[in-house]
Image (cartoon, rainbow, N blue to C red; front, side):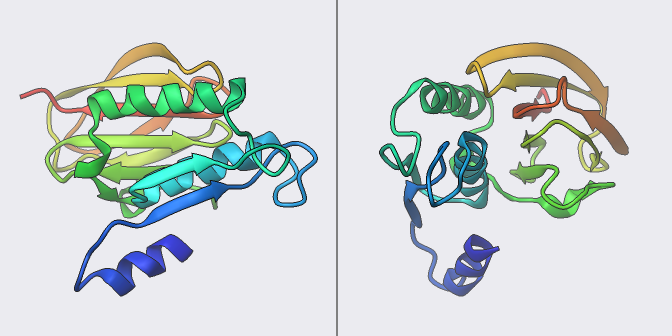
Amino acid sequence: DDLAAARAYLGGQPRPMNTVKVYGAKGSAFGQTDQKGIERFWIQLFGGSAAVRFHRPDAGLGLGDTAVASLRAARKLNERVPLWSVQPANGLLAEREANEAYLVADGRGSYGLYFPAGGSVRLDLKDAPGQLPVHWIDIKSGERGEQQAITGGRAVAITAPGPRNWAAAIVRQP
């Protein structure tokens, strides 16, 4: 919400917004779990921050295995959906619980989706007809997950492959 307010404030004169010191790690006073740090990183990334990094331990994840896997996953998403070309697009999501999923889109058929703890939402793909591949990325490992196909041109239910952090790249083929 704070990042959305900053984006709105800067709307007339856009400029890069950076997020340094993403807090959250097990035992930290600034978000007591590693999960909080991962969520904050991905929400800032999807909110449009030009730069995002984990703060050093003990207040953040630093460059430990968990943070590195998250960075690896973000790079894999960026390979398919260039994050500088998208805008936050949660308005295209329906049947979404608070903080269940986050969406970015470029308005031309490319979407990035983040689930902090698994879940299922409906994605409005009325402006993206045809078959669209869904490339899942496991944020815990930083590795690619399964791929599936969905049919656009309508609202489509999308369910994360499991109950943890997942990202998906959905890109309409030319």
